Length: 414
Image (tube, rainbow, N blue to C red; front, side, top):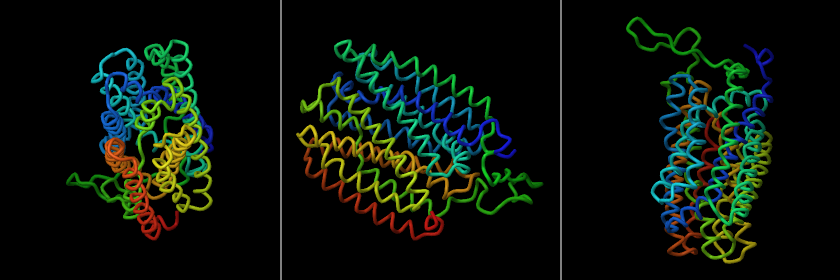
């Protein structure tokens, strides 16, 4: 099937999938905007908040080591996408009513597990359409729509918190409605475009044929390097190493928001408003770096370590304006991480191995996120100066790795 005969044009698919992400982010980013203060109200310390939110993000990324290869092996991209979104939206509303720290921690991690289940499959589906729209621009537009929901959700939570005197229960229960709408749009899109691989200008290679002894053979049309058993390219591993090192220095918003509330820089009800602004910075950063990636290639990724190094130096001060600026820098770094980094993976890895690559890439990033969350929480309580120096050192190392990766094979052309 050609893209011209597909039920939706490539940009239509990107926008529709972006709408799904918009509604999903309405739900889970609305909750994540108050995760730090919510856990703190249940008795959690900064170290516990850093560990739990870091573990949640690590689960969202690390478990893709399983869901990515599973998607490539079963080719059930839509099934995994729908199941993951479903798990996320049913984990959020109960957060405001469980009343105990351990139960809230379980729900925080469960919501992130849903992201792990769906993300490699979802990114692969989206990558097919972005092959026709431009990788950077396609992923950037999807991320911008995604972050529109991340803007609306925290503002909604902030409004309900303000109206109810800081009661988390109604604020989080209100997120059930956009969750239901998201599932409806996702099922509609699945019915309209059952096979997004048709958008690829070059049709993905067929599965390997079985020989007489039951082993996988090359097949008459197999292109070397696209079979599921073929190792991922060296350029991909160098790129994943760069991403892991730079992610080790990126704090979680849970720790940032804890600092703001614990030091009386912002009231609890203002934290979701700030988070909405952070998500706007995320969207604008995604659009800017996505355009820059399509125009200038992987040189655009230099911005990520620079932004990451700036975050702790700004965010963990006692000046409200500077700390808010640090949170905005965190959002800009996240925008690069969640859009342009994914576009680069699609350019480095053949279509038949793409979900696996996304899973492995997320696993590396997840391990780095766990280290970063725990490290940030621990160093925050020990010495903010040591935290700033440590993050600066990791980002210098990341820039070196990026330079090495850019000189290798396929990434040199990206």
